[in-house]
Length: 302
Image (cartoon, rainbow, N blue to C red; front, top):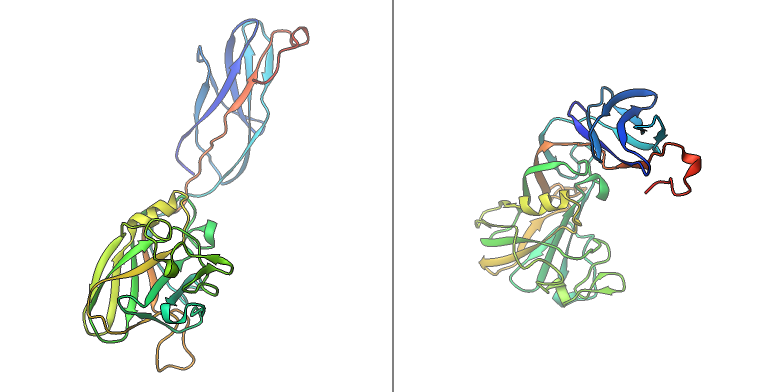
C-alpha cells in the first residue's frame, strides 16, 4: 500500500474507434485513459488495505460503451524490512527439519536423534527450515532477501571445513534413510550422493570450524533468494570438505546433558529482509465495444 501501480485494459471497436476508457474500483471512478491505442492504462494507489473490485468501461466515437468483467484484488500492507532468526523455540517457531543418513545403517531413519553425526564419508547431513508462507514459514512469499546465514553448533572436538549445498529433491525428516528420501522413493544415489539430481553440485557457501565447540556459519543467501522467487525449498546438505576425519557431533534437536532436550535449539537460519510484503495487480481487463452491439454477432470479448 502506498506505491503506484499500473492498471491496464485491452479494448477494441469493430465499427469505429475507442475514445476513452474509464476505470472503477467498486462504484468509484479512479481514472480514465484517452490513449489513441490499446492497451489503456492508468496509475493507481490504494488508500486502504482490503479487497478491491476493478472494472473498466470503454466508450467509442459513436457514443456506445461496454464494461469489462470484474477483476478482484486484495491489497495488503508493505511491511518494513528487518532481521529474522528462524530457530525452533524462538517466537513459537517449529519449522526446522534435520536428519543424518548412515551408510552403516542404510535402512534406519535417524530423524528422531538429538544430534547429527559427521565424518568424511559415512554420514549425510540434511537440514531444512520452513521459511516462506508457501512452505509453512513466517516470511511472506515474494519478500526481498538481503542476506541469509545457516548456523549449526558443533559440540564435539575436531576441526573441519563444510559446504552447504542446496537439495534438488524433497525428503522427510521422519522417513529419510541412506537408501530412501521418502518412504518408497529412492535417492538417485544412495545417501543422496548424486551432485546433479540429489543436490546442486555448486555450494551456496563454505565455512570452517576449529577444534573447540562453536558455531559453524555458512552464507546461504543465494539459495534463499531463489526460494523467494518460487523455487522449491528442500533445504541443504552439509558436505565435509577438509579437516580432521574423526567423528564429530553437531547439535540439532537438543542440548546434551540437559533433560528433557530442547527441540532443535542449535539449528538456526538468520535472515535480513528489505521488504516483507508486496502486492501486484497482474490481471488485464479485456473487452470490445460496439456502437450498436445488437447489430454485430462478433461483438464479444477477444
